[in-house]
Amino acid sequence: MEPTPDNKLAGILSPVSAIRGQADLGVGDTAALVEFAGWAASKGFGLVQILPVNESGSDHSPYNILSSMAYEPSTITTTPTWLPELSVEAFDEVCARHDVKALREGPVKYGAVKALKNELLETAFRVFRSRKSDRVRVRSFAKFESDHADWLEPYSLFRALVAWNGSEVTSGWPEEHLNPEAAQEWEARLPSADKKRFRDLVRFYRYVQWVARMQWKTVRAACDKLGVALVGDLPVGVSIYSADVWNSPEIFDLARSSGAPPEKVFKSDPFTEKWGQNWGFPLYNWQAMSHDNFSWWRRRLGASCEVFHFLRIDHALGFFRIYSFPWRPEENEKFTALSPVEAAALTGGRLPGFVERDDSTEENRERNRVQGDMLLRIFLEETGQHRLIAEDLGEVAPYVRPTLQALEIPGFKIPQWERNPDGTLIPGGEYQRLSLATFATHDHPPLRKFWEDWMADCGDPARRDAAIAGMNELLGFCGREDLKVPVPFSSEVHAALIRGLFACNSWMAVHQITDLLGLDERFNIPGAVGDANWTTRIAGTPSEWDSKYPAELSAAVEAIKETGRLRQGMS
Image (cartoon, rainbow, N blue to C red; front, side, top):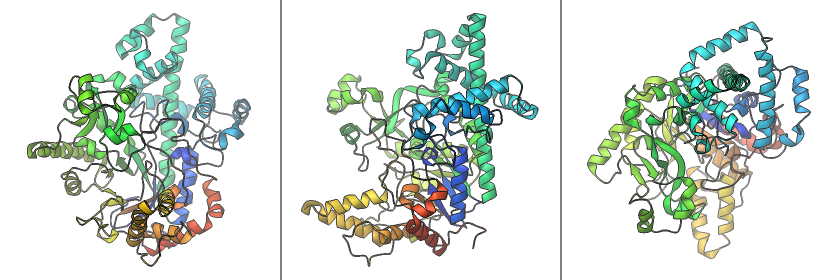
């Protein structure tokens, strides 16, 4: 399929983890995503957007990844239908040792779900290792090992060491494990039994990635057949405890921690409100990356394009200049109450700020523009035209959007943030065609929550006027100035919001699954500490949503038709 800006697309966004499949084991997986894509296609959607599916760390955030190349093992469908080495009997035997019914209910229980999936993958690997697998698959695996050796070999060694040490936090590893050369020497000295056990671990993680890649290519093929474009997501950074940093520390700047400056939306805690978001990812050493013509990025983009029709570039602003901290997130609490002078006294005079340079002078702004332009041109060489989508939200420098437009890279349009100089909302009909419009990202409260908070504020005289203004603005953007506010969130309000976004001029108009179904659940609260983030799951499987949310989906289907966004091939 070749989607073009001439044909406007209606999209739907969901983390894979949030989708319930007919036979999932407590977290969304490749099979559940195929079900979701099929359901979306049947409603007229031409685009399905997901969050990153790289292997994540112990916090389970899809943006804190252990590898720029490896897929998250929990996205693998570990049923006999999708995993040929796993017999029905073996599957049933493993599942009998786990409370699968409890895992399928409620939010994602990552520890238990990953333990079950890992046991199923280990069971399948034992069959594969015993050479009882299909010869075609054995040859396919050997080819995968050969074709992907440049990243697979160091990744699988690193991943085996994570299992061996029982932790991904490399700062706690023995010195002999802290780099590939030392680890290889350590492995060579192991007693034969330990060496065999470790080699089996290495090969197991290669097998897992082979299975994952095969399944994700199956997802791509299913979307191609459905006529649905699949949008992947490239996180802006990798974990400081990632395979990438462990294998190639020279291409990263490990002295600072990337993040975003304070701004009006994310005020979930005092630190974030005062200093900004401290993500903890190391910065890129662009000069070091240039020595081999940015091969790390080219490999990453090339592999992603094998699966995804479009790629969302997370925090595209960071490729021009990125906000960073001179301390790790674990130290945030220590700095929360400090003044800039007091903080600088603890950091040798360094404070959070933009690097390599800020935008304080015309020279700096031009150098930042040139850097971003150069990097994005390299990305386009790997992806081709009109395949990148730049997440350009936050503190947007004046040169960013003109650069994106010159490169014909769609940026984001969040109606509440797109304003004229006089403060009024820019009408959706005036949005550039090369853009993606959405009311919310995974970091924002759903529309229903926004609306209910406004309704609550209407009972407070000090906040009433602002709440009513917010309602009127959004309804005005959607062409429903006739609705008298304040009015509770209803089917009519929901239908207006759904249609209003689809009516804009953007090539892609994407509703988050929670907004589409009129729900108030959140996937992530930036800056929040706890186990609730990324655990939300949508009630029911896609095939059950028609009966659970009939009014909401009827409004969406009608809006897709009325606004000319119906998936190609449908009438």
